[in-house]
Structures are given as C-alpha cells and as structure tokens.
Image (cartoon, rainbow, N blue to C red):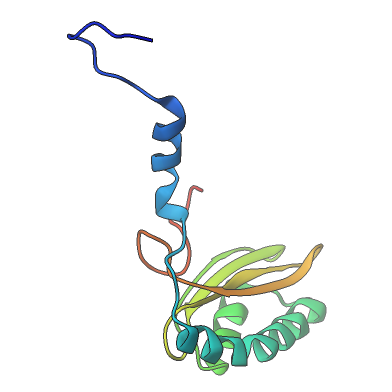
Length: 123
C-alpha cells in the first residue's frame, strides 16, 4: 500500500518481533557450550533430588546451581515451580525449570540479549 509522504510506515509484526528481541539468546562458543554441558547431568540430578524431596524452593535451586560450579544464578519461583539460569564455567548459560508437577528441564545456550541467563520477569 502506498502511504502519503506525511505518514510513517508501521509494520506491527516487525514491532512485535523487536519487542520480544530481549528474550532471544546470543550465540555461545563451542568451548563454553561444552563446559556447560559437562555440568548439566549434575544439575539435573541435584534438582530432581530437591524436587522429589518436597523441599523445592528458590534457595534450594540456587544452592544446587552453585554446588555444580555455576555462577551468577538468577532464580525465581515458589514451592511449586522454580525457573533458573546461571552462567556456565566458561560462559554461556545453564537454564531451565524445576517443577513439582512437570519435573526438571535443563538446557545450555547463550545469554539473553538484555544480559544474564533469564529474560527479565514479567515475560
């Protein structure tokens, strides 16, 4: 559609994509991914133990991440579900969720565009 010269074009799909860009992940080097991958099983096992013990909490998840050698943990949630992310030993992020109902998921990837391993709350 041809717009009059006094009108600015607007693409709502592009605007929505840009609005969500802060949640997208940056690339991670092969070395950083490999070192983070080495702790995934340890993190998953520790979080599954916390979850199945009935003591799921933000502090328990944070402790499990630190015990696995991860740094700068970002953890939010409650006794039903805890979302987490932490920097891997050589960069990149180990992130996921521990949920009473859904179990434990752990992934490795790069930092989110706005920094850190989790997008800002309110997502």
